[in-house]
Length: 190
Image (cartoon, rainbow, N blue to C red; front, side, top):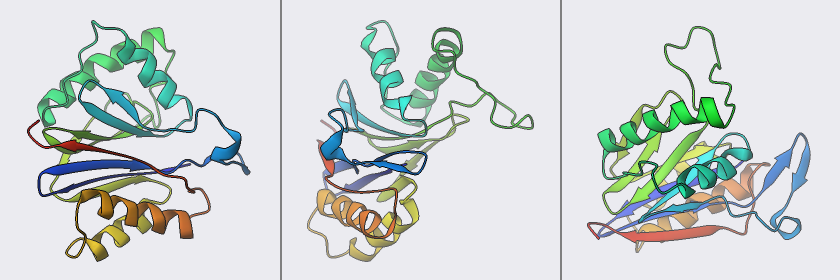
């Protein structure tokens, strides 16, 4: 389980993640896991997946191939990047694309928050993509993070302060989220 947040304020965007992992009911705190960072750099963008623990490894492996499309500049560009990725996930990564037989499309089996110079975005399992104006959160502590970010939005100095508030609320009240936190900022339009 995890909590991932993205925020946008003034000329900066910020993405942040907690560092707790769980295997069933067993907690795997960051102090016991070397590779506890949940955020992935892809070009000038940062991605934060939620879902299976292997999602980070999958995305790092997939985007390490230089020929893979990696455009995170807007809703349609992200959709096309994910559409292309889905075919490879099924063929080369053995993804089980069905969550529910009634789903109209194959699932990525993960949600991904994205911070890029173009803004902040969320990609859902069936590859719908949203662009957010202020902040958003995915994962087990998302509702807590959203409430905290809403509460501090007007008074926070910057996007990083908003993100930290969301992560701190999730780590305090969600038993599947914990610090330390990883935060990365990106300048808008850069």
